[in-house]
Structure formats: C-alpha cells, structure tokens
Length: 236
Image (cartoon, rainbow, N blue to C red; front, side, top):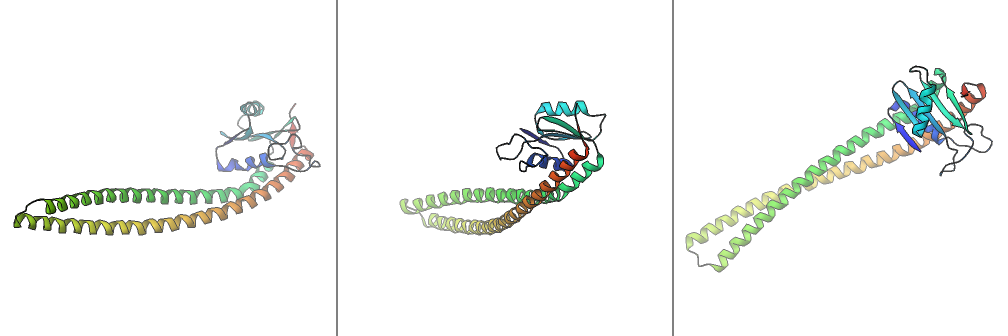
C-alpha cells in the first residue's frame, strides 16, 4: 500500500485508511490489513494536490472519473467503487481532521526547534574538537621543552627561555581549559532544552493519538451516512 501526502489540507483523507469497525459496520467492511482493521483504498483529488492510500492504478482510476479539476474522493468498499463529489461532505470531513492537522503543525515547529538545537550542539562539538586538538599540540610542545630541560646542557639564557615558554604554554592551556568549560556548560544547557522539547513532543503525540481516534470514529459515521444517503455514488 502506498501513501502520498502533499499538503496539510489533504491530511484528513489519510485517516480513511485507518477506519475500522466490527462486522456490523457497513462502511469499509471487507478484507483486513495487518492491524486487523478493514482495508480501504481511496484517492482524494483537490486541484493539483493528491492524497491517497492504495496503488498508482487507483490514482489513474480516480483521475479518469474526475470532471475537470473538481474535488473528488474515490474509494473502494467490499469490492465496489464509490465517488464523493459533494463539497459540503468533503468540507465536513476536512473539519474533522483539523484538530489533528493543527497538532501536527505544532509538532513540526517543535521538530524544527529540535533540529536547530541539534545543529547548535554539532557546532559546539566541533569547537570542542578543535580546542582538544590545540590542547594536544600544546601538550606535545610542553613535553618537548621538558626533554630539552632534562637532557641538554643549557646556558642560563637557554634555561630562562625554556622557563618563559613553559609559562606561555601554561597560560594558553589555562585559556583553552576555560573555553572548554564554557562550551561544556553551553552543551549542558542545550541538552536540557532538547529534553524539554522531547517531553513536549511526547505530550503532543498523545494528544494527536486521542484526536485521531476521535476523528476516526466521527469520520466513520460520516462515511456510513454518505453511503446510506447516496452521497457516495457507486461507480458503474
């Protein structure tokens, strides 16, 4: 089964693929998918946007039934094909999905914030890596000075120069240590923000699950009514 999703307004139709029910349910009774819920093949065309669950052949089928660029919902139920063209009915279905769509947009914003925080963490990590490399180079220079001081017969002037260079190296190392500590604090603050965003995403996920369940139940009723009233017209 293939799902295509090209715009938020079309999200309402994705929920059609989740519609289930007991044996007494008329709408979409038939073969069940892996989840145990009745399968549904549908295609929604609205302008140049498409939302669907099924195969590319379903899209071709729906397009052949379309008149001009009219909004259209094609679906298959128990082996029969139906088309809904009623604008009011399509708007009702869209309204059912609106709360979930809004929560999804909020999740998208939170996801973008998480991505930004992640990029900031990456930049800080790169800076930490550079500082670590510089610290390694300074440590190597300090070791070289130690070897010279211990293994060479040095003049007083040379000993004084080595002492001066050691002080300079220690000052640079101290500065780098301060920069590393500051970066570590910044990384910790970013980590706290990431955890907060993660908790917010988890809470939104639960809200979306509840909103989707409500929309599923309401949309199932709406489509059963469309079949009963004839608003869902069988394709000959």
